Image (cartoon, rainbow, N blue to C red; front, side, top):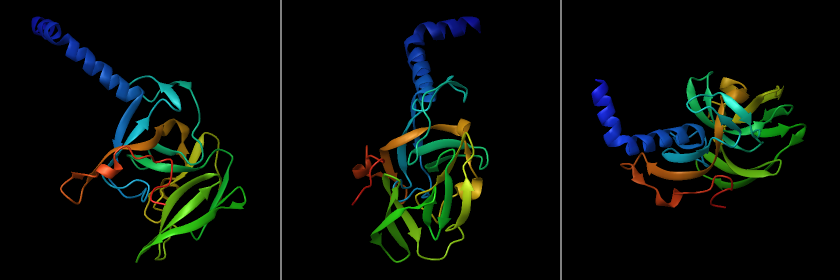
Amino acid sequence: MNGWILKTWTENKALLLLLALMFTFRSACADWNAVPTGSMKPTIIEGDRILVNKLVYDARVPFTNISLWKLSDPARGDIIVFESKASGNRLVKRVIGIPGDTIGLRDNQLIINGKHLDYKIVASVNLTVDKLENLLGVEHLIRIDKRSSPLSDFQSVDVPADHYLVLGDNRDNSADFRVIGFVPRQEIIGRSRSVVLSLNYDNFYIPRINRFFMRLDRPQNL
């Protein structure tokens, strides 16, 4: 057995070292994340593979969530990827409230620290309307269901220390703060600002070339 291992290492050490470095890089530095649901529409759609910067907030021990150094904190408007213990899934949402903020939602209009956000309608179809939301200086698109929704309101809450309030851009179809509560800082894996590639799940996984390397930190189709 030991002889087989030694022979395998001798004959394939370059490949094995390359694979080890690749997996270490993906674990600690950057990776991509598949998006299977529409909770971030219209910004991110089903079939997008988004690039996740894992070094933007923390330098971690590879293959763990142990932080060696905190490099920065998530900012309001960031699209974050996190391992949600409350849902048991890896989720992608937008940071709406940072520690110390007071956040409320009235008829799908946010109130942050007493300020009502500005909205502009950019598109409307039978059941949904897309709006440009000005998140205190960060503009991005959101999607609202024209039908009544129990998710369109919540009472003002204070965001506790080391926690974040996140929402999906598809406001009436997202399991976010209104379902899982605040996100602890240690659950956050990284930030995404671009799509790597996109496959159309409803059309034989044909690549959506127009979404390759698309930026997520600026509104599209305006």
